[in-house]
Image 1: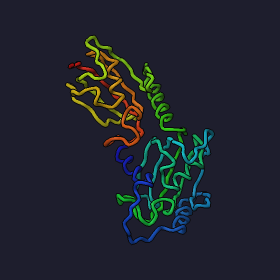
Image 2: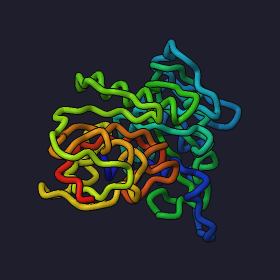
Image 3: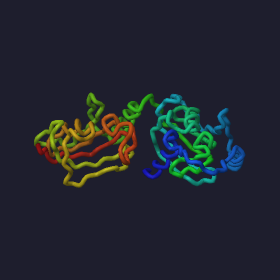
Length: 279
């Protein structure tokens, strides 16, 4: 999923990826789209903007607005079938997407699915994207399913964490900050404060189970005042020898901008073991 996600983000984050460089380009046209539709024997509707769409299932839940946070399952590619990328679930802010994708997702309710055929002028136009993965003048095809609609990333994170807890049959405790934690082994040694220096072994994963970071068995040393807020708070619930899980919403993790391989607004799971409290 990681490589797919990188390409997908380069497709959809319209405001941050458009290139200012002048290019020589022969854009794909409406005639190219019509030819594609006929070759696939699709029944489509064209909007005033020029977007083509097919509704396989309208859905029965909430209808997203241009400012909604939407969990989407997708597959995307070019008219010739290349440029494939896909994800089982990704949370998107409709206000940040290329216009054709933002408009198209709003045509479905929760549970709805279908196909969007986005002309280049509603995607990356004659500039293409800055990485070169989307050529200039390219039509994009998205097969999408709208999984859930949220008012905010905070609400989206909460739903995602609760689903993770339910799917994994966890006995989790929620704190006032929004952190969830699970104590599998409480431990019997010293208990740290939010400014303690500790040694912790850990594995960090996205909620889909993909690992993004992992320590050695012997762990790493750090001061709890110098890590993400979810760790500053969460590790203090364990004693030396304690083990468990921290479920960290983005507000207590890496925020709206993310860090490295961690996208912004992402909830995270950490398997942790408090090896020692050093001072």
